[in-house]
Image 1: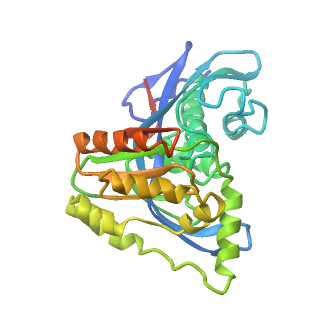
Image 2: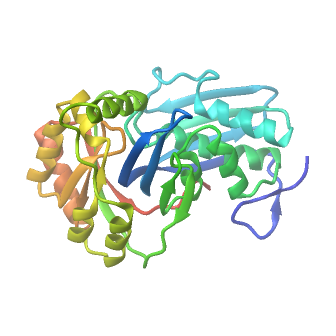
Length: 315
């Protein structure tokens, strides 16, 4: 086995024991959805933002490839070859021509099918963990190339922070702005929404007599981030998928209303939903909004988070 370079290290490292990687969830501060392309993807123009809800993936040596888990979604999430973790491990093994042998264990807190890219986050963690476990020595950019073949959000979750995503979301450009911590409340729903179903509903709505109006643009959102003012950022947030998510899950309107009544600066559906996120002015304000949402009983749980967070990192 060759020595492996840690993506953030100056010295090569060899890992013989467990490798633990923590990875954040993401929200979309702006999600502009273009028409359906010939390859089956929609053209996207989005601003990703990594927040402080985390999953943890542990990789240990093994004589085959196995996956176990605990936490959110246990008993519901498939652990077979359809899981993005397994697909990521096999894709990395194929790219680097090493045996796909590892015992993988997931500790999950990011909700399933919640619009927070939990599955993509887990795949990103797997790429980093297995790269170090196997000593394959790929850079973070090379891991992102592997990840892009599996899921559009994976490259961003390897890098984290706040970034512009184009293509079908896989082409990542970091957004340069003065360091600012943004405070959020995440309203976790009971049950999930299928991302393909939400995109399909958006196509259906756009073909109707009263198509939803597109949201603003990514340039305005990036300019708002640089002003470091929650009110300015709130006016620039937008999600083209929100009308489709609301059409499929009308009760989300009650969540958005309750968050606003609890004092949030603004709220929106996260990605394809059904999770909703609310912007707060500071940590104390976020706690107040979360308490109001929990008291309203419109979601399974409302929790506070902050961003931006780094992407997948070894713990």
